[in-house]
Amino acid sequence: MRGGERTGVVRLLWGPPAKPARGPKPTLDLERIARAGIALADAEGLAEVSMQRVAAHLGVTKMALYRYVPGKAELVALMVDAAIGPYPAERGWRGGWREQLAEWARGLAEVFGRHPWVLEVTVGPRVMGPAELSWLERAVSALDGTGLSGAERMDAAVLLVSHVRGITQQARAAGGKGPAEEQLGAILGELLREHGERFPALSGALASAAASGGQDQAWEFGLHRILDGLAALIEVRAT
Image 1 (spheres, helix red, strand yellow):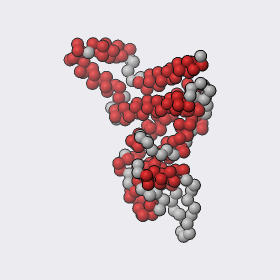
Image 2 (cartoon, helix red, strand yellow):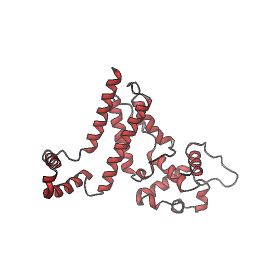
Image 3 (cartoon, helix red, strand yellow):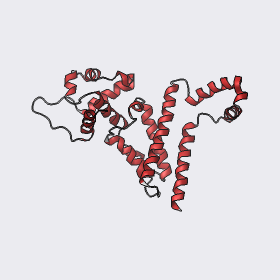
């Protein structure tokens, strides 16, 4: 994101609402614009979102839309923050830090599942909006009082986000053809039936997983192993 775009994003996401200018009453607001972009991205993908199409969806001209949003980069930033939304207050503070982070991760997975295009634009250095930051705030605050440093609490949140992203992207790649892990198992099964002698450990593991019904557990397995690691680190800090 270029410097000018970054400045525009900061102004739109964090600046005070623009004071109405003299003249006709504004017909749009940033929330309506963001929701129109989200509707297009959800239905057709982010590549199909343009200033022209969002303007048409809202029943205004593209030039009228530019009065509110300088360009597509700023539009997408607004869409991301609106799509993610503030961390839901109804999720509350149930249980200890482990239960809270598990609930947090599942909630984030639900957001990515509803708006998979968000995965494309929430990577790399960028300006985050207040709604998105409320999720990070919630994860970091869940670890208050655990003895972890601020950096460790931030890193824990980033690690959980990475797990949620990875599993969601795999599920998206699987499309409507069943869980991604199930598809991978089927492909590996075909290969190992012919070449299993070259990969005995993998063949044994796959056969064991198939016999025990242990496949398609990557989400829960990964989540709980991350939480186990944090629990071990918290115990070290306590001693």
